[in-house]
Length: 190
Image 1: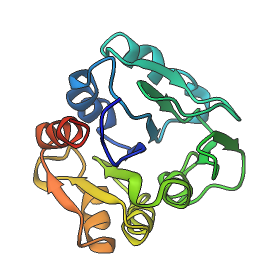
Image 2: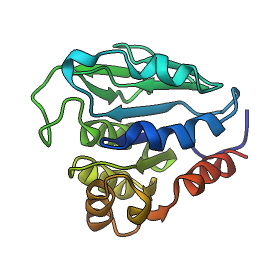
Image 3: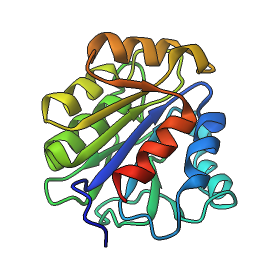
């Protein structure tokens, strides 16, 4: 295992998510030393479409998150459609069918806030392309907990609303291109 100070990566995206994640995730090696937790806004009737799509592109294990499972290094966990994905204080995952947050279930804010509580400064939070403000307050929670915050450069995002709102809420976040985010994830665990 590497000497990285990080324990997890949380990523949030909406419109343009597949394109953005297709640049970042395939660059990561099979032995990537962190779990990657992802919320993408998908309709409730489109459950389990993202994991098979990305498993075909990635060297890491890609799965839809299950309630009460541990978040393991070298695994990518997508929030299931119509469920919030949360991180418990022991680092395990949980699912909740609570009310939508920011008109979204799963909500990026819910994942980021719970992951910030669980991992604190050992969390990397990333906001990618999207057409609403979900994730902005969650990214601020990551920063407030001492975590590292990245945002897709709004000028290069398919939909720039989510990155712009995230930067407004969390001005300390670094805005990077997708290639820059992929490079950061590799260097952070070297």
